[in-house]
Image (cartoon, rainbow, N blue to C red; front, side, top):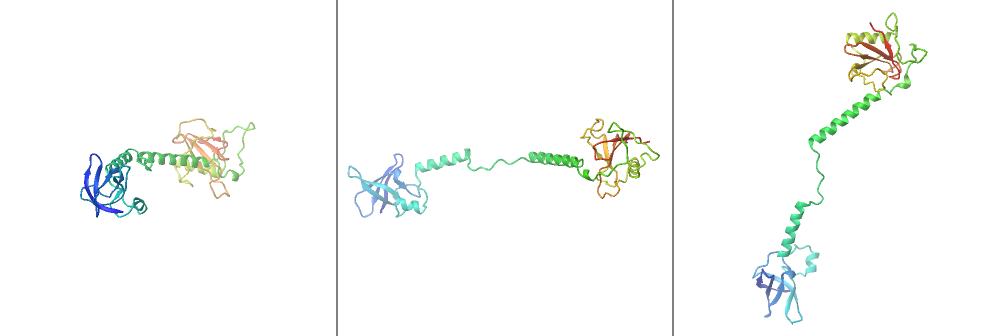
Length: 251
C-alpha cells in the first residue's frame, strides 16, 4: 500500500485528495472508500491503494489508517471505519435497539401476582389433603357391631344404657361434650365439609369431626363422630369412613 496525507477534504460533498509520499500526483478519494478509525481531517496520515479510471485519473480504492489492506482489516478485526454513513447507521441501530430490544427477558411477575399464586397453591393443597382423608385406611375397616335397618338406610338412631354401648364411641362423645383432650388434637374438631352429601345440607362450618379409636388399629382408623352446631346439637356416627352415617341420640 502507498502512504500519504489528507491534502484536501470536502466534508459536505464527501471527497478529497491525498498528497502521496514520494509522488507528485495527488490521488482522489471518496468517502465510500474510507476505512479509518478516526474522523477524516486534513493533514491526517493514511494508507491507500489506488488505480486509474477511464480518464487516466488516480483514484483511491481503499483508504485506511494502517498499512493493511481492507481484507487484512477484516481478518484482524480492526475497528469499523468512522465516516458519516457509518455514524448514521450506528445511530439508527442504537435508536432501533431502544425501541425493539433483542433477546429481552420476559417481564417479571409482580409481587401481588406471586402472592396470589402461592395462596391458590396452598388452598388446593388443603383441599386435596382433606379429601384424602375420605379414602385412606378404608381397607382396614374393622367389622361393626352396630345394626342397620333392613331397608339399608344410612341414618338411624342408636341407643343403649351408655348411649351406644361401645366404649370408644361413648368416650369420644364425653370428650366432645367436655372439650377434650382428644387423641388427635390436630385433626379432632376440624371442619367436616360433607362433600359426600350423606348428611343434611348445612352452611360451611356447621359440621365438625372427631376420631373414634378402633381397638387393635395403630392409626386413626375409619370411625368418626360428626357433630352439627356449636355447641353440638346433633351427632352422627360413621364406621366406614364417611360411606354411611348413623344418627346418635345423645342426651
